[in-house]
Image (cartoon, rainbow, N blue to C red; front, side, top):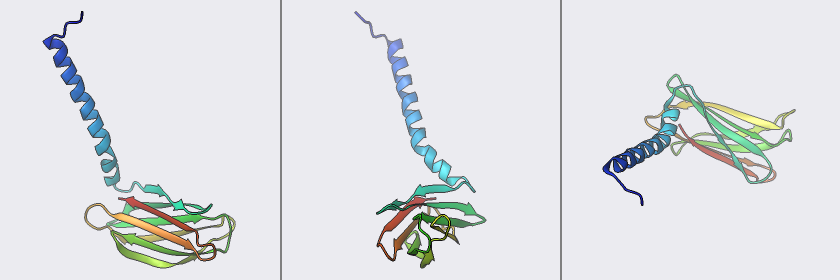
Length: 138
């Protein structure tokens, strides 16, 4: 027969508190990571066919340096691209994939708005209709 003492109860409560504190810090840690100046936030793009890509952003002297890359493994393919920052379009244009990698990279400097910025990018292949998109918070 086990006896549950007040000492055991105190240890259980203390252990539960420690577990809750650790769990809460795990939830808060990603937000702290995003706030570090100069560290890039990278998000893999979701593509509807076989291409791949990523969206990357980092703080840069009061602005955000944004980089959107799509790799199709075929050169000279036209992609129409749009990029948004907090719902406001900051880029609309086209890029062609280049040899030897068959990819394009779009680099932008955009204003770093107050608070957390939500950056979104979307590229559509003009020939195949394939769509690659990514969103990140920084």
